[in-house]
Length: 374
Image 1 (cartoon, rainbow, N blue to C red):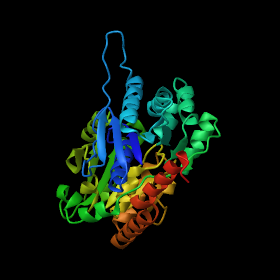
Image 2: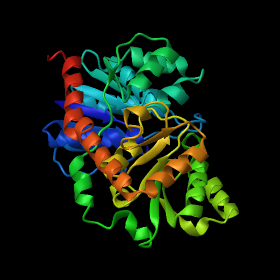
Image 3: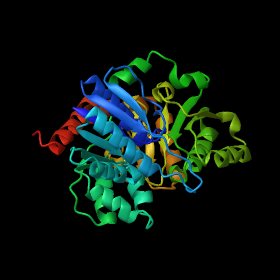
Image 4: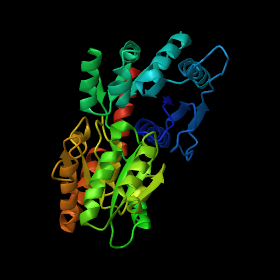
């Protein structure tokens, strides 16, 4: 197949999954054209079947805000017309799905199928905003196929947008081999001393991630156990978090690593992963931690219970319950046998349920259905 993939090129989950999917499809023999306003952070041109097309947004004095959605639609048309794409797979509803539907109309009579994957905030935040609700609904309803990364997100989409559009759950995935290769490296241990327990958090540092809760959980742990917190990522809340660390007098035990394309480089060798989010439609960072045999302490919200199995590979607790999360962290850190057992169970679970080959084949079935090939 000739497949176009449009995504945001950032370190967020939707861009990461779209990029990993593009590379996996290309490795499997499909011709894949990635379309975005910048080169996605994880995109590696290790296969001759993989191509990148930049969306250039014109800046005219007339436009107070550059019209990215129109520029994206135009680029999709150009790529689809000249590369003879079979379909365009867009990740994130706004504006990607709407731009793809518009491109399909402009291409007529040349056919182009539109597959839309919903990742979370495109529904729970952007799509739920009255300013975008109708646009989001339009993009989803007019897509040929729609998938969501979790059952929780599918239900939220149908409820919040009031639509009966069939939505197939195709979860995020991991490449097990990538994490096996990382075991040869020092991983998280590079940042800690031999006696320190290493706790990790990875996010885009937005309010919904509740990174201040991460610091508060760690503060309580650090009082009881020699430990270090590794914060991976960047975003609008980082200055506030850094100031909170200084005010708390705990900066000496916290390392801000910044954005890291290959997160296994910091997850391997870690003792615990913290994800106390306000909401998570899936929780890709938790999945990646589990794949590295790192137990996860997270909130029992959204799609996280579909990833983290309470009492088996981690603990799920109420949003904002810092005390309970710290207690769970201390329980795991104080029992190496339990922590290792949770880690091994997490690895087995994600390899069994979220293996790249299995999930990519699910996407191929969605494509074939859209193209009436089955």
